[in-house]
Each structure stands twice: as C-alpha cells, then as structure tokens.
Length: 248
Ligand code: SF4
Image (cartoon, rainbow, N blue to C red; front, side, top):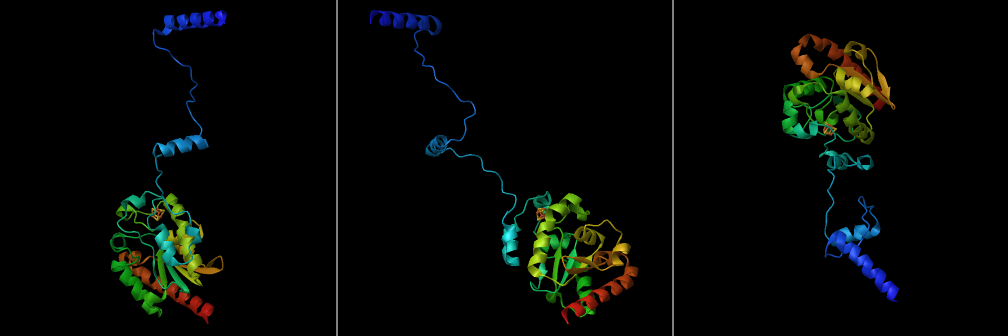
C-alpha cells in the first residue's frame, strides 16, 4: 500500500514539474467524428443546426401525373444559371390533351415578362399561322425547350438545353401529342438530337417515340425575312395533313 502511495506521489510530482499546479486528465479527441447515433442526439439536444443545402429542383417531377402538378414541381428550378436571371418561368400553354404540339427554343423578352410562350409580335404571327391551317391557339399545346429566358435573347447553350430537356420530355409524355411542329432550327435539333441546317430538317418527317415531328421557321425569323413565309406555309400544310391523317 505504501509502495502504491509512493508511486502516485512520484507521478504527481512529475506532472507538477511539467504542467504546474493544474491537474490534467488525458482524454482522446476524434478530430473528425462520425455521425454516430449518440453524436446526432447530442447535436439535437444542443440545438445545433447543420447547414442546409439549397434545393435546386424537385427530384420527384418525373412522378407528376398532370401538367399542373409538373408545373408546380419545377417552377422554382435553379438547375442552370438562367434560373437566376429570368423574370418569370415559362412552362407552356394550351390544351393539356392536344394532339398537336408546337415547340420553340426559349422564351424571349415578352414571354419572360408574361410567363407565357409565343406572345408579342412573334406570338401574333404564330396565331395567324395556326388560324391559316384551322387551329385555334387554345386547341394545341405550345412550349419551349428552355423554360427561362437566355439574357439578351442569345441562343440557348447546349448545356442549358440538356439540363432543361427532361421537363419538355415529361410534358410530351403527359400530353401525348400525335404530331409536333418545331419552330426553328434550334428547337428541332434540340428535340431530335441532331445538328442539321433548317433546310435539311424541313425536308423530312421525323419520329420520336411514335410522335411525328415536322420542322419549320421560327415566327421571329419570318418577321425578319418575310420571303421565308412561302416555305413555312408548305411546312405547316404538311403538319396539318399529318395531324388530319393521325386523328381521322
Ligand atoms: S432553363 Fe430550365 S434548367 Fe435552367 S433554370 Fe430554367 S427551368 Fe431550370
């Protein structure tokens, strides 16, 4: 017993020589603790909040069973930089059960302000084109590949189109159109996954998952160059003919 007392006294004297009068207890520290259950409980009891990661989109959008629910799931999307510069998210407009769908590339300034595709001068011309082939605007569904406006009306970038495309594909899956009219080279190449000129695209009728696809000029291009209206007229007559055949 005396030996033990002597050893403790010696040990304490050694400690005192190194650390002074303060008595230290050796503990082991884990510098990067794993989130064991006990640590989570401790964090909770201390009311320490972990940093929240920003939610960029609703990953459940593929489960949407209507256009309305899809819109509400994706309208806050920030998956590309256009989410930060848009004024309004432009989902699409028209008959949710349309057999005919029109697809453009992206919202412009008027669309960005109104939250609706193809408004303004180009939109009015599109309405006139539809009327000429006996469609009311409300009868078809109109959407763009991008749901947010590229600043300064620049062309959509490939990465933006790739990121936004699943939303359009989901819209097409919900609407189930029989025929699609692509308005402009960028929309047609984007939807079909091609890199062709508009002249080449206009020569063919394409098929994506059983849906016929026809390409023509973007109405804004027709406003800049009215000489292209004749070619557009031929394209939209073809579009109407396919529609009539498939819905007869
Ligand atoms: S353009 Fe499409 S992917 Fe980019 S933020 Fe808008 S909705 Fe999201």
